[in-house]
Length: 239
Length: 281
Image 1 (cartoon, each protein chain N blue to C red):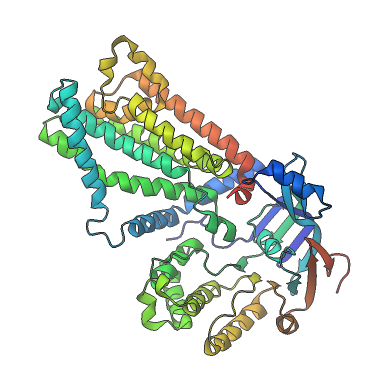
Image 2 (cartoon, one colour):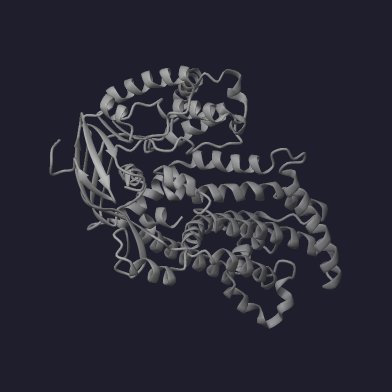
């Protein structure tokens, strides 16, 4: 069973490569909530503070909030990229993340080479690689463009390939950022069907979005973030 | 095909700021990174291919530039030091090619983590993988100049005896240093952005302070002090077996000592600060 459990999660981004001293004066002078000094007196941006939540199997969670509220940071923390400076996080289950579609793509390689590269990232064997190649090649509908370097692709084509690659595995926990809405109508219809399958089969979905249609169609729980804190839908108030 | 410990997707992970388990997770990073050597190899090959995309000679440029450098430096300094070419060129070939391998790697390892920023921020991958990629990439580059060594040996009839096999532990020492150094410099340079410039300058100086274009004998009595130079010690573990019947024991001891220092330093820093790297790049 998949499960995500976070207690008192805190993520801070230190501002290293700027003139910290002058900035400190400027920023800390004003009564700021997000920019503060940490224990070692460095200027840090508090991206997530004291965040507690439990997501059980079967929950489809929408993370909503303004730009900079901490949605993407929370997704990346759940994916294990950022390690919290405070608090505890346990994630049980296979994670699949659709956070950035361009991640792990080499623009000078052809579409096919990129598929093989992705197979290596995932540690697939020869058989599974061939399967991924056939599957992603078919789904992306790129045809002859599959043997063209991806830097020659249009934006829509890159997204199609990225989407095909990202959704070719069935994870238990699916983490998604809202990037997948740039294909043409034909592809979007295909993508939605694929996503629906994926979401149905995943035990947990966490999606960062502000699109209320997405929330209504796919989610059964809404967590609203504001300035790095949960203001609604966290551990305390079961929604 | 797939190794038993090859990670596919994460099944479980847990972090607790109050109990960070630094050592356990640094070791897991090392283990996972090494088990993904196939990926590191593929990425290194891509790097090289992309660097020489559209070039006619491609990676042969590396062979050619080493050859030109050998001929130019060989003729000039052979004459300056009044050494016979049959003595001087084999020395220069081994020294210069091993030096280029190490120096190229050190320069490159400053950006091990900085240049992997995109990957680090999007995917949970072992950091060891990035160090391995840089080590592979520079070893590929060096491999293109490597054939020059046997060719020059053959031309001058300077064939080494069975003690040449000792060069293998020498190469292993260099490889260990590369992996540790890649992580160490990669981390320090990600955190302090002035270090890459310092490293470039230090390397330029080290090239002249190390017996590469000159021979150690020219130092006379002062040559024992050369053991203080880690570059000399490491180059000597390869050059000694190939040219001098094994190399001085002092150089070997020094090379092992410097390797140990490097590994311990990299181990300590990596263990303690691994979890901060994603915030540094």
